[in-house]
Length: 444
Image (cartoon, rainbow, N blue to C red; front, side):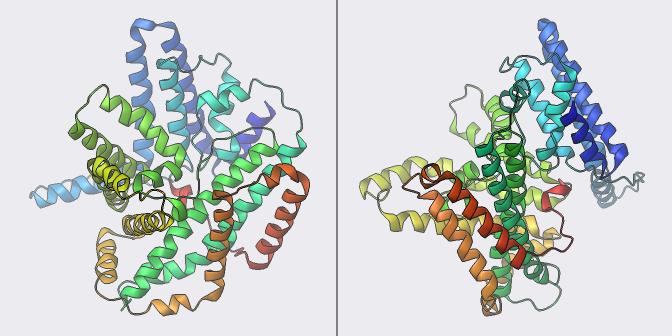
């Protein structure tokens, strides 16, 4: 009960009245899950009502005005003049996250992946748990909900690990993301001027790490703060930008909670038992197309994730040929081949994320056009030695984590985490950008 009150207090510090939406989503999915569990012959109808009700709330607050604008524009092109009233409402923070978390629970109950939760307050805490409430990870009932039934005593080792994870998150956010943001904004917010292709390229590269530092930073803070209290949240990032060897691998490492949510609740149900490769390709593209809509009411997000969908379709189509090619020349064991794949993957991801960052679709095409036609101006960004040092530091730390050969943290637990925490805290205090910079994913 204390955690539940704390979670609602935490959320209400932003906009108190919108806690009612959080409560509404909780009540709808709670009652629906009880109905699904009790009425076997009507459970499909009950689940459909729950999904429609929750997505209707999400649509109204997040997409209604955007859809109205697009319909008005489309009708005007057809020569029909209509007026759809605009509703001036704030986008509730974290609505996409807690809506999907609640719906995931209802679907799990439907498929009997988890037992129905009879205690309303325990379930309400699962939906509103404050560390991951506003920007994930999007937790599963099979992991987090069960933990609220356990008695938690203070665990010193877990608390120290949690504090270190939080500091790592603050490093990613305050030192990496917030120091890169002004450089990225100086290009993407001034494309009407003569921004060179080299500057556009470097800004796009830097945005990849800004986005990673910003969003992964939040996830590590969330996971760390939960760990301090004795709760284990799922991993959401596993070093996606330096070590992904394909776009498929990238999405196994990046925003894992959302990727697995869409795969489990959209892609696999769509594919069913089909063995048609064409159907698989359509389903993967459609899944990422929907993921673009999840991110926000803007065509830039839809285009960005549609590009990722196209990449993954290509991955599916070339998978067998690539495996034969790598086996024939024994390329999988060669380090240079891995790094070549990582570089190509990073470049492909960067191109897709151009639209994710662009203010408009036309801005996205402008950046792409300039990258491929004019590479002057990159040295202006490369002269920023502090930023390059931070990125090099990020690479060294993630390389050490990716390829650690010994369990140093386990053998020298206290000293390892204490030294790490002190070092991170010092760097954050010295180089952190402590301006008012909200997390990027708060808008989703």
